[in-house]
Length: 206
Image (cartoon, rainbow, N blue to C red):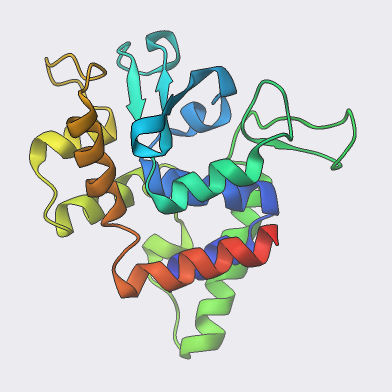
């Protein structure tokens, strides 16, 4: 409920980025700097993944980004908008589209204020302080907590969150990739999370 209220108050470009972030666990700058050249097709699984080079990742290690169904829908909605960057904003169909340099901006802060007010109007009580001050980085933590609640193994959580683990984390077999994608998909297949996320996405990009 909190997620839906917040995302509905965000500008379209930030809402897409936030939805992607809460379904991949990427850091803010990893989302902002995500490039199409990082995408790797996996035809055997009828999907793709992203490999972010180490120089763009906080721990310096190449980062695998497995896409669940919601994250893949966000990616597909951005195709063709910009030749280099996945997430851009500006006037559609013009040369004015440019990459988003940060998500934690005035628009984010204004949206969370409106979302807090919407919560109070809907429930007749003040929202939690955590929701009132929700940070962009909290979306990464939410992704990790949801993985744990879904019973995803510690090793898979490490890989999906891009944590340094001592393993060569981007050399996966087809079976291992399929397993990681299934693990990420657990966040969008339960009834309590599936409907708001997918309904929202269709409304915004339709």
